[in-house]
Length: 258
Length: 317
Ligand SMILES: Nc1ncnc2c1ncn2[C@@H]1O[C@H](COP(=O)(O)OP(=O)(O)O)[C@@H](O)[C@H]1O
Ligand SMILES: [Mg+2]
Image (cartoon, rainbow over all chains, first blue to last red; front, side, top):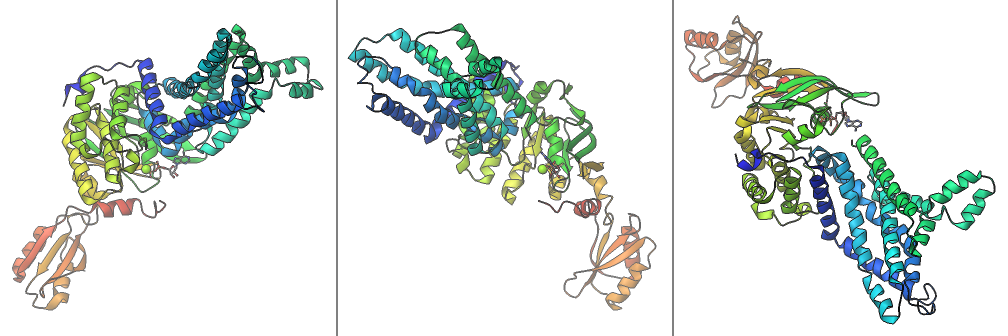
């Protein structure tokens, strides 16, 4: 037939990852879901930041984005599962998982490609908040280093949540269930360092357990990053979370293909 | 090209595929036949590396699917049951994705996609989302995806299921046009498909192979193999006399009435043990002075072979 088929084909895992990433990312934008998502994200961050009662941006008397980032964890709690719920559940529901898994794509490439697409999408939504950054610079003299750190922290936190969501999405073909379970899990990761929870735990659990639980808190780690302190341990934490949950995703996808 | 070795798949206590072995050579089109739930799809999913066998394995183009699944996946073009495709993509973006994954690039990629699109007649719908396509077009998208890299091994799970007769004919022509250079395994429960495109058929029932041979070898197992239809225009003694005469012949096991035309009487004469009895009947007709409208022997009926072998099975959808 044609020569196209007889030319040797590379089996480069990176290029396969990119293929999956590109397909997946384009998939977000062919439906209105992506646009709705971005609008909601921008609207809600805006409302939280600028409203008098919530963020109190104008009452703070200082030009920074503290109010803006303060709400990110809570916003992500609901928005990130909405992105991640379809990652694998949709493949299984449509039956395309059989197609995907019988194409010459290594499983890690498929898992990573999908995750990176979701992360890139979250990154795009986050990047579209840049007018806020411009605004604070117009209104005053913010510490832009702190703002950059907070953006990085926010993006890392989104990645952590997405990895959890990817894992949950691999467990079911029902997106609603995937959404709910992801919210619950992410909520756990958020509040594990929250003072009332810690107080409750420290009443009976050994100190090591309390510390371990606190160590898993997305909230405390995001808080410290968004104050401008980028601690290597926090970076390692988020990347480890992502790695562990993507690994778990691969195991579940492999075990539950049928 | 495809070597299936003692494949077994259990789902919990249930054995869906139970020690299936067969091979498919280049140039062969193997029809994998069986009632619903026989284990056809499960077997194919193991060969294509989607499901891990409980035991046994498949070797495709020299690569063991349990050891080198990616190599196997590169060699195979696979159309899963129902031709799944990403519903919110267009055939254009979908085929581009598959081509990219298959390692096609640049001009070679564009040209190959164009060629395949022409082969399966997708030209008119390339920019329409797949979920708005008719069943026939969706199936073609699935076929296009499977043959995009001109694979040496083509595995298709019920490629014509749910298509109208014209579409079935088109798909079969396409398969036949590719048959010479590939090893093709297709599953079906449509018997005419086997006669139309397959060089060999394997019948599976309850996870076990119960027959393996060319369509004519399978037809030879039929009660109707070498059965003769005879239509007599001038049956002097009436139908009963002709029937009696036929029944008295040595090779005949049974004589069944068949619909006659214009006052002629017609019978279907079944042989004993598949013997060729047409000569004997012809000879008898001449001695009796019968004027014959019709005298012909059958090769056999695959559907009857299939039904008798898989009797009582496969009523579940
Ligand atoms: N994932 C699964 N879990 C449990 N049983 C299954 C699974 N997949 C298939 N089966 C069962 O295995 C049998 C064979 O199925 P299948 O291979 O799809 O049959 P066919 O394709 O011949 O119609 C059926 O009884 C089916 O219900
Ligand atoms: Mg099937």
